[in-house]
Image (cartoon, rainbow, N blue to C red; front, side):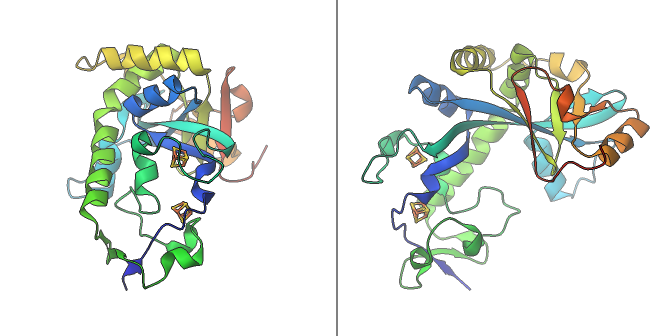
Length: 260
Ligand code: SF4
Ligand code: SF4
């Protein structure tokens, strides 16, 4: 069944967020005075998946290889604009004060960026009247109807893949070597505006040069679940509890701590 949509400008999607950004967008966000964070998660990757595994190929393109002890893994780094309460660009009349230069993710919402996630209107912040069937068609059987929206989603995904090497260098510059287990949570690194701006600039400067430092150094999985840590250690990976994280790092778990 088609999804119909028109934004009611309720402003709900502009509050209390971590907005995923490309590195270029993050540099702009910082220049505008906003805050950013790094979210790190990692997938144990003991063997290369089958060539026709589309989901694994998608994850592989968005990540860089590394090691935890003797266990290969793929690290996914997401740079986000972070704010509690209203976005610094949200105006009193609920219009975006940076409309022409707002991040791609703001142009895409409520559509999905991940091609493996189905659009679920009920899971979105938009009010019921935004989905009235008298509005233009947004999506039919997983395909978005608006060419400009499709182009923006494609551009987001292309930037995501393009930035992988620079994100690897960003981890080198910031000394990041910890990641949450994928689907359990994120390690959140908040080094502050100036440190982040300098690190992003350094990581983007060497855009054409791959760095192997992050993959050469051993990474530590962080989990708030003792069973997960024990499983990782049993396969010669390094694992630690959130309490072991260094300064400026936090653990954002999707589930309550378990087994400690
Ligand atoms: S940049 Fe604009 S559209 Fe994006 S969250 Fe902020 S106010 Fe909303
Ligand atoms: S939550 Fe939905 S309807 Fe409300 S401003 Fe955001 S996109 Fe528009």
